[in-house]
Length: 471
Image (cartoon, rainbow, N blue to C red; front, top):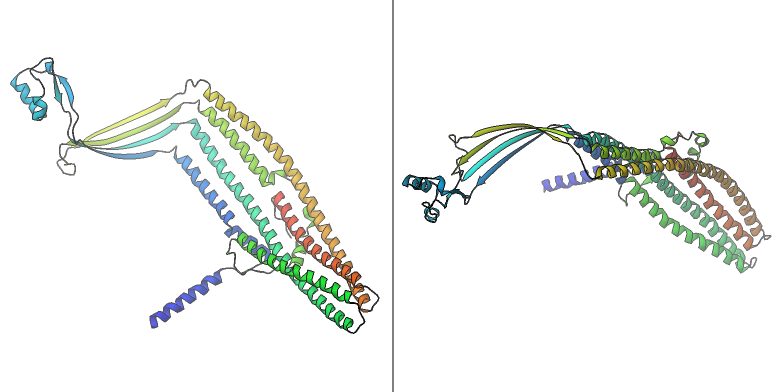
């Protein structure tokens, strides 16, 4: 019983320790840092770099000395027979005795050894043999190997650029997902406050109506407004749950994890207003898409070199050494077994001479693809310039729109307050009040969306510039 209690306590302690290791609260920057380490796409991009580094060494090692060893064991279940002309032997008893030492009675009796025109079946070698060899080979010159080394470096750089692009996209995705959660939270809070005010107004209006001082239409108008806001609240609460789940997926944690955000939408919006970013220098070469297009150009240039290198000779050298043993029985592990050594050194030269125009056509095809890559790079440069200009325009508009929506909300609040006062003083209609309330609710949602737009457009501009600007 005591052991069971100790085991139970250990399991509980381990579970608590594990749960404490799982982060549950994040500021925006903490969420970005966490996602860059734990997001599935970011992890795979990092592994691609590791794989590229291994491939680089794999390519390098193919031109370094290679050592291979082989051991062959052969056991003739029935040995091959070679036929020798009988005329080569004297037709004497001594010849027959020699033949008899090699063959069984069936073979010997079926051969007319006395006939000078016949053949004598002969078996050469032993029934079993072992051959152990080791070979050292070295590439001396191969043009395609030199191009391969350059390609391996380019491939590694491509993987690194892909990791940079992935990190930028993950960062932008986290910002968008984080902002969507804050938007949902703020929307829920505002809708709850609106429902509270509407419920109070409906209760007061209902009492006034019951006392005969207000029309029934006024009560019905408030009920319609309240019902609409309540419906929006239920939908927003569902969207809030989905927003949290999307954020968890982006962060790389369990979808049902209870995540808490420590930043709020308003302060985050103010932090992301950076007018200096609008005047930042547009260096196209810093854009990751430009760098990827540039890598593609270099890759196609190397393919041209590769096709040209196939017209160059290749030189290889090798050194071979081994031992052989022969026996009619399996005696190869005995001390008295004879082993016969051999060694060989050689150099091979392969010179391409004529390929019926195949190599020339392959080189021309590679050259065409290289020219296409040059055109793609020029096109990418123009597209990136347009992308940066568009991102700056969107960011500037988002800031201006945010400031405009703040003023609109202030106006909508004043209008709603005036109409509410008029309504309860009996000098305003319920229709005018409902219209003012609807206008207020629209202004509230527009301001929240404008806040989110400031955050998201800044992230898009930073991605286009491939820079993280100070807040």
